[in-house]
Image 1: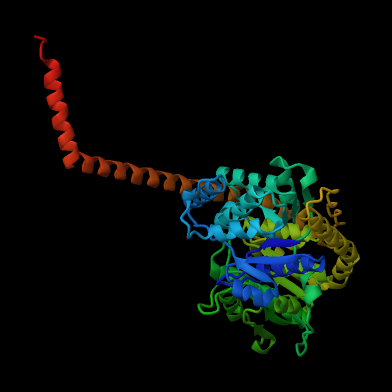
Image 2 (image 1 turned 180 degrees about the vertical axis):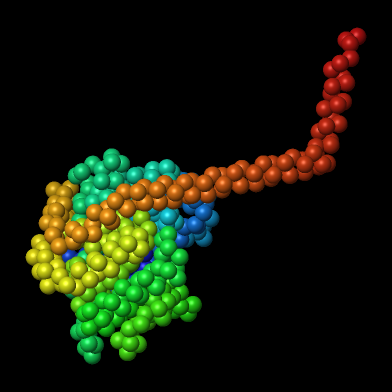
Length: 493
């Protein structure tokens, strides 16, 4: 069986989490005898890294109206209007590839929302092509939303409905899908695709004294960057002093030439720390398997990125996360909730009231109990993940068998109650406001684009009218009309 897999891989700016999900999906399918073709923005790189076939994916424009128009043009092409797009358009190769395949898998991720609308529409286009050729479609390990404009919400609903099976990776996404009308028999609450990627690909990390793994994105939410990074640095300083651990910064996303994203954030944090420099190590951007291995070699993980949480929980490592915004909060809370550790994800305001410090110190003090809690769930979670992939392959093969079971609710870890109430209260206020503001901003951008397009069309129409009025053909027609008018007004003889 030949399956086309769409993952967000081969980007100019390498992203450990996206690549890890792609690797995990390819491995799980390959272990079940599937012939995988990875869609990529850099097929040559992906062929080398994944050891599979790879082909170019399609790129959607960023502006909302342009991506809406392009998806419509693709749909018109599939309906037989071949002139809707030129012969050299990128979509023709994708159409031929999917037509010659047996099925399509859209790999996990957090890109089915309006904030990353160009990626949502890329997935919608792949779904539309798969549906046109009646190829089974499976969607795996997704976060849905939370930020969705009205139009993008319809596009997402249509994509989900076209799939044989949809896997989501947190409770909030499961609820959103059900509220959107997706039948329960098409929907599975599960884990991130890379939940056990670190375990399967771990390499011995020799030569390092015990350390904490730290990964931070440049996002600082409502706090100024200087204040945010100084407060994070103070917590890491205290943790290092109390625990005796070194600090290893592991970037997950960056342009290595401009040294932006995580490399920039890590430099600012490290510069603000008072810990001896020999205990601080700032790594360069690594490939997904090596970054995952170093993460799970740590005694403690501290992060504002998503996949360090995924790697740590799957390997039984205590972890504390900090959410700079609602998008991060939904994903990080969901990932930890799957393991009963949701209180160890805290909102950005916890840097101000000391709760992030409290949670980080508690994670270290309770490390043995937390690790025991995670290990007690590990075997069950691995079995549930394998059950998902077994069901996904059956669906890709066209079987309409019983839907894989949802993962079972995790018993809550009881050692985190002292700060969790305050964090929940903050979320109830900040998250809805953040979501409304983000959607309003995106809707406003779309409305401005609509007005701009309407204005351009009106200007073009006026210009065309002026050309017509000044043309020789119009003058000839006008003179003929005048002569005809004079003749028709004469009295009959």
